[in-house]
View (cartoon, rainbow, N blue to C red):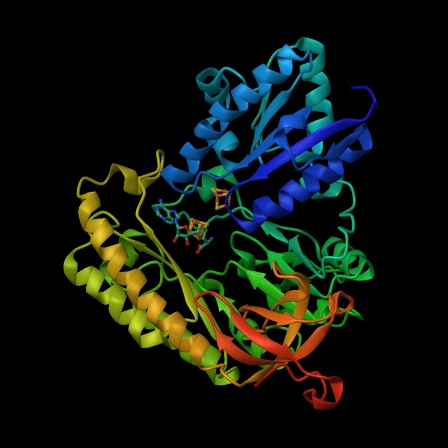
Length: 460
Ligand code: SAH
Ligand code: SF4
Ligand code: F3S
């Protein structure tokens, strides 16, 4: 691989871990001359960072590859070569099949091998044949990736601290695409957090497929929990806000519940998927918790942090789900009250145990259930947001909005908030009085400092 300047285009699908990985791919390719380019039509290397979680997500890759074929052909007519790489969870799950099915892919690379991108591109350049890398290499991805670089003035950043999953929910591909659970050592996480904060980041979201199962090696040789790590990172000077996602109810331990009560920087928003309200279905899903356990857990969390905004993931139409099972899901949503939630029709995934179940639910039934569930979630979301009318909240102003003079930020509860203000305020936390409630965001006025809330109290 020569060091001449080349252009790189990355399209990211799926979860935040893929967003983080895409940024790291940019970092690993920069030293060999690649510069990020927003336009796929003018890229020497196009990477699709893919998601395999549901059938629709996986199929998107192939429709995208159809479009890329045209780009590749058009550039070839101009005498330019375009390399196409498929990364992420579809790459891991389908490997060489992608090369065979698409006919245009030059590199297939699984999520554990991004540190090897330069070598693999070199190999491809030498052999002129598609290269497929889907091993789970022994040497660590994180130790070998270059430093996470500062990205413009964005005051928020993702930081992956944990990867993989050992839980094997019977519907889910993640244990197969991301491999066994692994936690990065505390020192490594802390160094990356320090560097990000040093470059202006005010809010860190710690990422993991099972982030609250974190058990990284501490500098004292002990195994640290997520709660201990959060307490430690909260002391970094200049770091104002901490979040983490995604959590499993089973790993929500006493320490973590207490962290939500005690750590001021830890924001009062928790994404805690429960998947189904029926104990029979939860058992078939291998979730190892009941609906009652979830209710109890939420009660404990709210004891320490009464204003906690909860979000969740729900699946409808898991094999064998009866009307009564689905009603139990609606009942649980009603009992908890969510600030927002993501809901999905069950999608059969090759290689997972639930895909083999005979009592699959017809699609029409799944659609009808999804509609009812989503209507309920929308009502809960609206009523949660409506409660903020005339309330003043500290908003981390993140970027310019679409309208001239408009800024967009996030509340402690992760609601997007629009307010008019000077661009210089980006990267600061300002008191904003909410004066409008939209479907997906809030509007407000930035208050002058004299009117601001006392201290750094994030609560209302
Ligand atoms: N690790 C997280 C979730 C990872 S996947 C957890 O354990 O909660 C994100 C969400 O996708 C899941 O919470 C689940 O609701 C949904 N999902 C996963 N596999 C699915 C499938 N086969 N069909 C439909 N939804 C699925
Ligand atoms: Fe998938 Fe379950 Fe692991 Fe979440 S906990 S990633 S749903 S197997
Ligand atoms: Fe999708 Fe892989 Fe994330 S399957 S949700 S990109 S872990």
